[in-house]
Image (cartoon, rainbow, N blue to C red; front, side, top):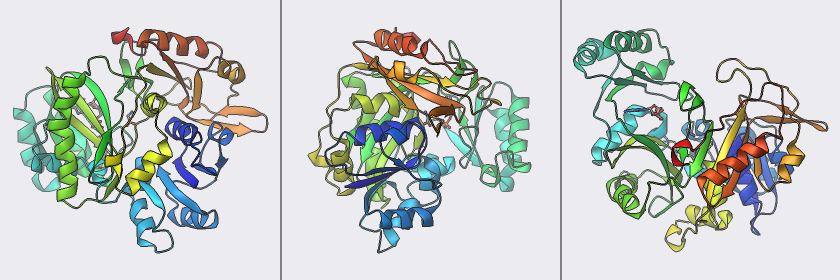
Length: 426
Ligand code: AMP
Ligand code: GLY
């Protein structure tokens, strides 16, 4: 079948790499894609939220499966757009409906959902302009640190952790009265700080059944040892060594099963990935967020460990047959190390030529592109995160060392990467 992937990052390059291996995949298209995806399929110059353009493209190119990478088109309702049009309703769309995407699109919605289904999460309250004064009193009486979350999508920037009350009050005032994170950010969730190791779990659901994909841990801070500013993700590892069978059973019982049962009970149409961000608090998993899509850079380590045919799995998802699927996971460890542009996550330049890619690919390590652009013969940087270099090995130490060695072969002006990804497990 002909398949269209929406997005342009390392996540989408990884999905393209895996889907292309399936005998069920005929033509593969990526909108808009990057220089990496162009080696596997055809890049289509359409924006991820250009639903009309994407619809016409799908009809003209007989697309049978549409896989949505980023959250933005999902939260804007791409699933419903395709399902409500009789001409495109038969296309297998991998991703949740607009209503179900609110699990990521609105922090307040997600917290209320967890409350309704007794899913363990940090205690919270919700405020906006109508109960602003209550919010002030709530913050003043709250223990520290205190976590403030702008309600709507804020490109990963809407969460602020404050270690003193004055900073929290200022932040609260800026969010509600000055719309620091936009209109939707004028609603604020205030919650208890959870102390523990973070972990990402990926559940693929057809709305009724689910399969668990490999777990991962990502490294969000720019600096060695998890110091400095937050980024989109500087690397990831899978598996996460402390996640054993007993822990997985605990997460299934306390979190995954109530989540899937909740989707079903509330008639939320969901045929896609539920990405559950967890914090492990003294051995007890608690949810810090839901995302309605695959993670980036987590995808770059979980997909290479999955041995099944991904088209088959997605088809079963769309046809509500996930009960027929058993996920086969490689026992190998995978580590991805992200190479970023100098200056990221603050200002950075793009358009720098990337050298050494051919040498790197000869090593057997996979160089996924996160932000790149083909310019004639040259490959240029085209984003903050530029490459995600994934290696597998018998353990995290070996896989990380291999990715770091390969990155030494790659050059572009200003290149930076963390050579300590997975450090606590090495
Ligand atoms: P989110 O956008 O909800 O994923 O939050 C971004 C990041 O903030 C998370 O990856 C955590 O590192 C941190 N975070 C969010 N909520 C909490 C919390 N309640 N306690 C501690 N850290 C949190
Ligand atoms: N790596 C975190 C995310 O994709 O949101």
